[in-house]
Length: 236
Ligand code: C5P
Image 1 (cartoon, rainbow, N blue to C red):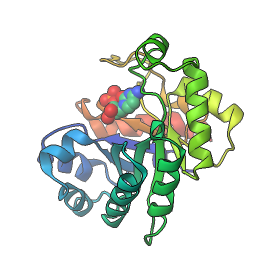
Image 2: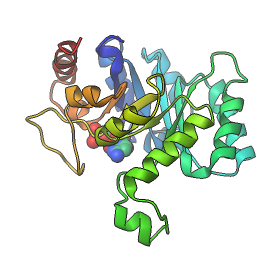
Image 3: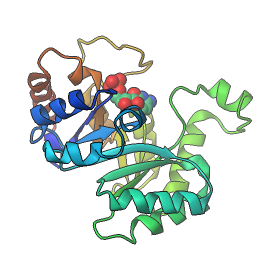
């Protein structure tokens, strides 16, 4: 995969005009754009078409679906029909839910990639075990949920760079890993607890990098993207 193809820009804003502006500036220089719940709830689902008109060929809808199998499967089909390139759901919805969603996604022409979220990085091992009553340790739980996603025929998972290395040891290479929490070496970390540089994340096994503020809060987002591409290109 080409270096720039790996970069997915998170359009984290409630301002549709701002999102369109980022797409106009960066389309053709990156692999795609991530639309999250903030933008879609503020701007409505028409935002997908507006972003496509602005040049976004690949849209990752960060929907994080979690419901009973029938409901998620039907929602995935509706999302697939909107022409999104990638969409995600929570693996904790279980094997049956994920299997139904995968079958449903593939029932439309040009099916989207279906990606699972394992354990939110805002959950510590303590919270996972004490609040949510999970017996496994955090890493074991991430690996367990990723293996279930694989079994359900999903295309990959969202995982931090730390988790990516663990997943690559245990799960086949064609299972995609999408990694957020990216910062360049000299940057502010904002509210991210653990951050990784683009090159480190790819070395750990990430296929795609979700990058938000590092690019969108930069005074020159395009120059920042080109810096990231250069950093990744040396990896070959
Ligand atoms: O921190 P940054 O602005 O690069 O965040 C980019 C995106 O990654 C955000 O949309 C956020 O929801 C997502 N994300 C994250 N950390 C995680 C999981 C997702 O920042 N652990």
